[in-house]
Amino acid sequence: MQAAKERGKHMGRPPKLSREQINHASQMVREGTSTGSGTTGLLER
Image 1 (tube, rainbow, N blue to C red):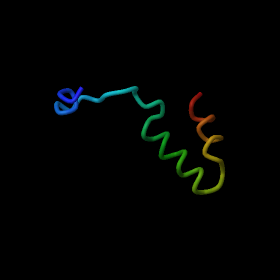
Image 2: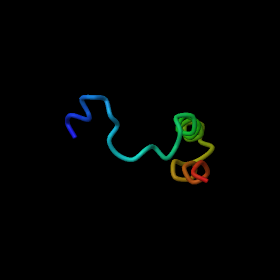
Image 3: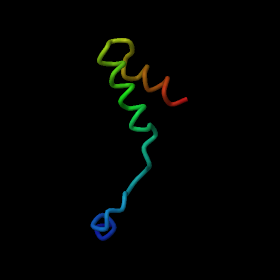
């Protein structure tokens, strides 16, 4: 695994949410329009 990491290979599961979805969820939590777990439930569908 060390050799793969040195070659820049990603190890592990792919992210469930896209970067755009993560940013949107963070914004909703900061604004107080949703909680963390509530926002994740909306975006995973």
